[in-house]
Length: 187
Ligand SMILES: [Zn+2]
Image (cartoon, rainbow, N blue to C red):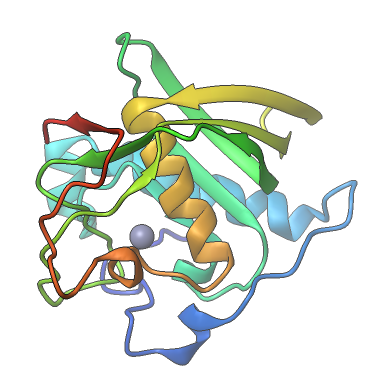
């Protein structure tokens, strides 16, 4: 399985990152399972300093298929949630089926492997979401709730499937303004 590297990740000057990604038919074709596993490997290995150095991996907590040049609905997330639980998601066709009124922001703003230029400002997202997706690791449909940092990461990755980038959400006239009813996550 050839590795995804940071250099090979599609950057935001490429219009393909702005396309909507296709919903995948189930059962998943083998090539998409392989793609998902390559994406998962990138994110997992990017957490390891030594591997990151050797294999040209910029650290990440998530990745979406359009970022590796395939416009289909696959995302991966590898991180610890706010309770310290290790989370590893490898999902096809993820959909946010409900979300809180309360918003949340990362205090320092967001970053993205596909974005090299600096885009300063807050990205307001739903503080809590409910997601329905096909879980590629267990090969079954699942529904789950996410909050805090994990909810932010999931919304960031799902945005990629709709051709949306984090800085699209920044209020350019007042980038650091915190909206009402917003929970701040120190980042
Ligand atoms: Zn991103």
